[in-house]
Image 1 (cartoon, rainbow, N blue to C red):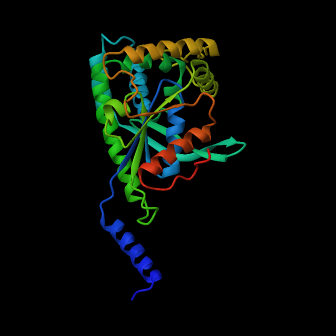
Image 2 (tube, one colour):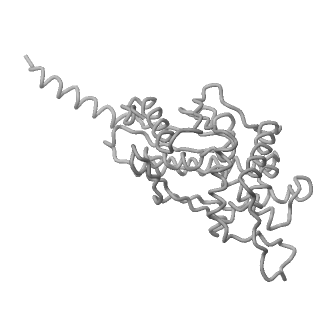
Image 3 (cartoon, rainbow, N blue to C red):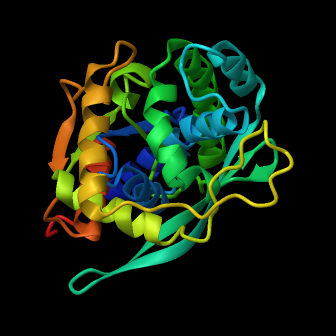
Length: 306
């Protein structure tokens, strides 16, 4: 008769062998929410914590907007067809590398990867965050032909990110599947409606305005984009940066446009977990999401006390 220890050891060996033989299914986390709700930084940190790939959906629309500014296209009527063609043939790469840390008194440092956005090989990471791009991106993103072009880029980047996440993972790494985290405004409702975990991040307009102001304040050395039709201009003028109150009004206008647009409007998916992070620390919102993901993957949460 086998001892209890032998039987336990055999069950553990069988479980490990079964996990190796079963195909690993990718796990998708969709994070949606209004502008400046912390989607991108949170999604990056979540991906870093779980070892998943990351796609910044908004950066693709910002690349399209930057192309529009460079072609002097500021209206969704004239020239929008050529812009859709430009973005559909453009090569957008999103490279992630560990960098910044958010210091919190109780939870210590939390790594937030830096994201480098390449448009046809050019690093436009800072240029796509200027006030000019901020003001135009909602209009560009509302056009159906632009959204269709971006959709193909999103899904290709997500497939590539999932593949890298799965192949780079150790077979015994907590039996964790490969996966991808993507943030935007219609990820859980349109892009990946079957995502295993959907999050809707929200915050008050003023809290979001302060975050956006902080982001802009770090970009003050980035000039206004020079129009394509003015090649003789020696230098672009300095950017004019709005106040927190002005940003709050712009965000509310952006919310209205996103919620009421005809194509893929901003919506809360019926099965999404809503997180209002107005009064949460950065680490709290990140660990809330990673623990939710771990639970849905059948793993033990690591930060249940957050």
